[in-house]
Image (cartoon, rainbow, N blue to C red; front, side, top):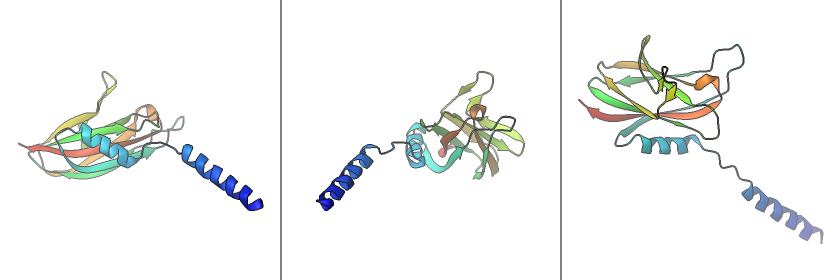
Amino acid sequence: MKYRYILFILFVNILLGYNLKSYSQSGQELVDICNIIADEATYLKDFQVKLDAAKPGEEKPTSRFSVLLSKNTIYRFSICNSKDYPGKAIVQLYDNNRLLGSNYVVASGKNYPTFDFQCQTTGVYHIFIDFKEGEQGLAVALLSFVKKF
């Protein structure tokens, strides 16, 4: 009788474990979604970012990546935010200290899912990713090749 009771408890725990499974988005799912958003562009690289919320009085956390881009090429940056976190990613592309492109327009306060960059000079460029108003977030920025010009 003891064994039946133990087996019953194990069986119930297994069933409940499957029903309580978390359905949060993973980084790979976000990459797949971004690849669809990239629309007729060829996947090159992804940048997965998960940042905690900024503490009061501190600067918001930022991730930085470097990438080599080629002259006379149009690149597309696609940004996908996890629905499980409140933060909306802001992606900025820099050449030294000069901002070249972003998915966030300061004047309107709007975030866009993609932005294209027409590379004029081969070199190393820097990608900065943070979250609007320093909120906690999980996002993927996808770098894709659009075409040569």
